[in-house]
Length: 314
Image (cartoon, rainbow, N blue to C red; front, side, top):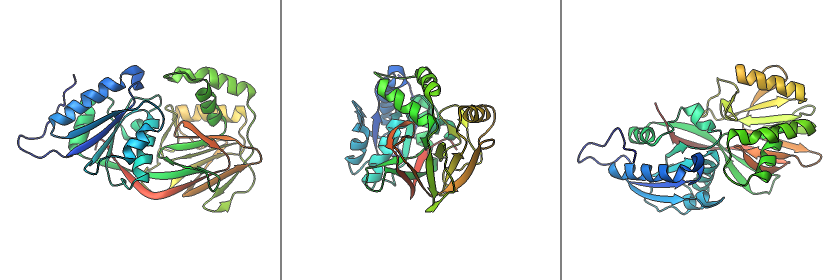
């Protein structure tokens, strides 16, 4: 069993009195449950009471965050970005926005871990929790149309080829996935790909013309391997909007190469800043939210004004 490398001084009060730990047991190729139990044991050695919950399906993390006991002063997510998004969704919907959140990244892309340089092992996370340093994360609300159900987003949404791949994979998946799981779906999508025709409004003002690919992001990294604008800040009260008028296979391939070797924007991609973004199309087009299937256009994204504290290395 892993042990923390730092401990509270004898007789001192723990930094956090009570923690809700939510874990996807099959994350990390089945290592999620073992990591969760190691973390719970480490927190208890530091004097923190732990309520450990293992997810069995979609919605569990959100429900447990919503129904958490009133004395919980720390929430922990173990799993991928989807587990963390559900946890944040539950905290947002239940007035738990002041709770600091820690996360052990064990998913496929782990985008937040790349941007915040989060530890990927239990002893490192225990050190981060005990140190108590936080970074702030602007949260957004995403919904289909004006009256559809809302989802919390903390990473990015995409409409175009990337979202088509996410929906293809989700329809075909039967268990855990890896980055290699995306390859056949990317190849299938590229073969049959036709750019969408999207209309975009930014902060209430429609943009001229149409676009074939749209990404709205609060992160530097995208999809686990692309780099967007390295000057992006997660707490500046705005997200970055990346737009492709030319979303042909050639243009997107060039942007992928640019993002792999350097940075996006550039080439066929332009970038704006936004607090609200709406995207519509003549026929419904799928979009993803933080790498998971979202819904179909039209969609509306708005920053909520809430900044989530994430425990992270200083």
